[in-house]
Length: 329
Image 1 (cartoon, rainbow, N blue to C red):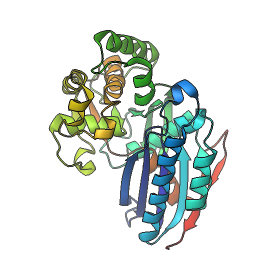
Image 2: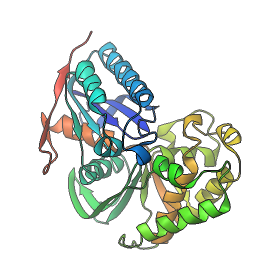
Image 3: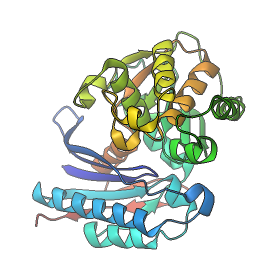
């Protein structure tokens, strides 16, 4: 069984082509991320720009060609997250998906996104299923926080919330100077602390799991990774104070210098400081001494669903999402 899962995010479009192994686990055939910044300016205008749509459609078409070159997939599903939930002008993006993959784009709610993120994030990690785990997913437009357990693929969720606080959104709202002014960073920190104040506590010795490009990039910078290797980062423990040093270092230099930092994804350099502040705010709230990095997320949760059933049932309010086989070209 080969599946293809595509996650259209505010900042990044992710593709996972995976196959079910004999032991029941999924193995990646291709795992790719492309920054298209679909949500550029959405926080102000609530509308996609033609340039952002064009970049996104070009990426979708490239992904379709890649999947066909690999021999197609038995099941394909595409989801859209924060920017697709709130901005107008997404019809063209959905048309691109339909033409490229032959399926409709399912716009997931914040709750649905969080559930998929949790399921994907903990896959492949050595986590005690009896203990409650916290997962946070920092996107471009929103951040999802989930506390729950995953045992033999069954989720038990104790807390779940989607905050309209993402790296792109907060950069556009707060960080007007280059490098950011101290007053801007202070205002950003206060906003985040207030927003996360009602998130349930965790024991201080319990490391939350952080996913998505912000966390993998910060981990990559912290160890000076010259060439990105997700497998090397998946499951890595990053101390909170090391994370803080990394974020402070990045916030202290201008964008040009930030792009040149070893381990930095250049297209993420303009929003990495806001993303880092989100992560630090959550770790400070929990008093967590470290965070576990996961190189997985929504795309892995969606792939797990696809590999297990023909129609992915996200539950209310959106209902089941049909998948389709993509033939080899």
